[in-house]
Length: 233
Ligand SMILES: *Cc1c(COP(=O)(O)O)cnc(C)c1O
Image (cartoon, rainbow, N blue to C red):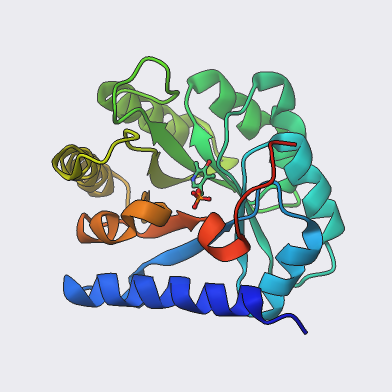
C-alpha cells in the first residue's frame, strides 16, 4: 500500500493540532477538508482508507464524476468550494453534501429548490469577498446578513452552516490577519442570530496557523496532502 497520502494527512493534522494548541484551542474544533481537485478518485480512496472523510472540489463536472466513482466509500462527504453557475445547481444539489461557495441569492434559491426530499438539507456556507477585490467572487458583509436571513426564513432545504473566505493573495501577514479578523467578527455576529451556524471555513496550506488563531473551524488543504496539482482539467 502506498503510505504517502497517509503520511501527508498525518502531518496536516499535526499542523492543525499545533496551531490549535498554541492559541489554546482544541484541535477537535477544527475540521480538515482535503481538497482533491485535479486528483484522481483512487487518491481520494487512499485518503479515505487513512481515515479522511471530507473532500473538497472546485469544478462541478469533475466533482460529480469523483462522487460517482467513490460511491462505495462509506461516510464520505463532498464539499463544493469553487464557483457555481445557476445552470449547474440541480446536479450539485442532488449529489454534494455541502456547498461553501454560495455567493448570491439566486444560487441559494436554486440549490434549495433542487435538493431532493429524500436527502437531508444541503449544508451551505456563504462566501465572503473579504479582500474586496472586484475580481473575486463573494458577498459583502451586509449582503451576507441579508442572504443568511432569507435562507433561514425561506429555504428549508438548505442548512446554513457558516462562512467561507479566500483571503488576498499576499505575503503581507498584517493584511491577512486583518482579513481573518474581519471574518471572525462577522462569523460571531451570525452565530448570535442562528444557533446552527458552526463553520468558519478559512485557512489554506500557507496560512493555516493564522486562520486557526483567528477562529477558523475548517481548513482547506490540497497540495500538502495530494501533491502539486496537474494542470487544470
Ligand atoms: C485549491 C483550493 C484550496 C486548496 O489549496 P492548496 O494550495 O492546494 O492547499 C483551498 N480552497 C479553495 C477555495 C481552493 O480553490
